[in-house]
Length: 126
Image (cartoon, rainbow, N blue to C red):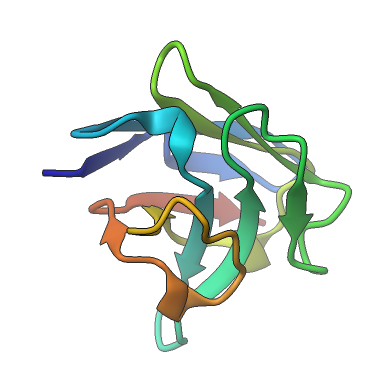
């Protein structure tokens, strides 16, 4: 059974940084792409960043976070990270990590992801 557990959220002032972590278990972590999504109050869940399997040579970012956020993975630790810099109040949301059922999937589409963590709250104060 695939399990994803996020951590690292919290309250930070605008301009600050946070690093989110997502620990995975239940299958060979390196075989699968990973992604981060977020959901702000009253809004739909949206794509943030994705990283391809194994070396993670391919990454993709939403325009709203490009140049500020960095996704990375450590296959030895079964963990994916999201480094978030220059945070703004618009980044306030619950952040979720996700992974697809198929090892061949690398996507920014929410519907392509089958396993989700419970989410971690990020709040950016102005």
